[in-house]
Structures are given as C-alpha cells and as structure tokens.
Image (cartoon, rainbow, N blue to C red; front, side, top):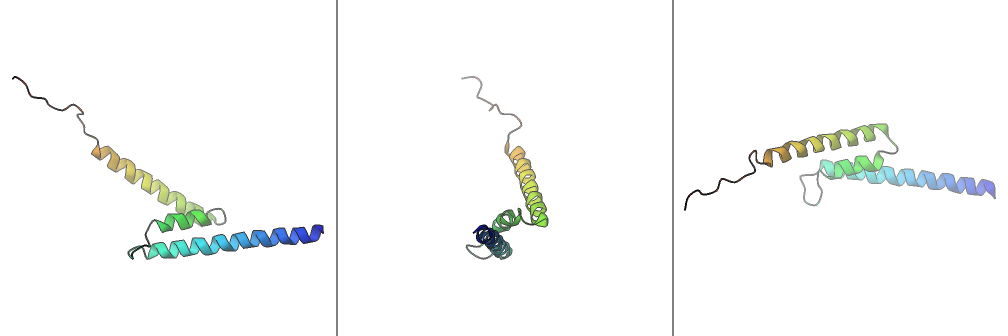
Length: 93
C-alpha cells in the first residue's frame, strides 16, 4: 500500500509540474502576441509567475519585470504630483 501511495504522490507531483509548465508557456506565448485583442502583454509576467517555482530563469525574469514596472510607476507618480500644493487665491475684493 505504501508503494502505491508513493507512486500516486509522484504522479500528482508530475501532473502539477506539467500543468504549470503548459499554462505558463501558453501565457508567455499569448503575451508575445499582445497586440491582438484579448491577449495582452500582461500575460508575460503572469506566465513567468506560474513558472517561477520550477525555473530559476523564470523567477529572475519575473522579478526584473516587476522591478522595472515599480520604477516606471514611481517615476510617473512623482511627475504627476505638483511641486507647490497650494493654489494661488484671489487677492482683494
């Protein structure tokens, strides 16, 4: 009985890896066709995230994309903030 459970556990582990591999690969390939409707470039980081536990290159790629997106967001957020938050009011009256 113990051997059967071990084999079942191994098959489940292999199944999960293969499912993760297929889903991650399809997401990355769909992201490369991001100019088409429904598919988008957002699928690339998601595919890397799905593959990250199994592949070191996917983990590095995901982390580098997320770092770039955070820097981009912070850079544009600082541009939108006014340097002088007080509005000039009317004087006199």
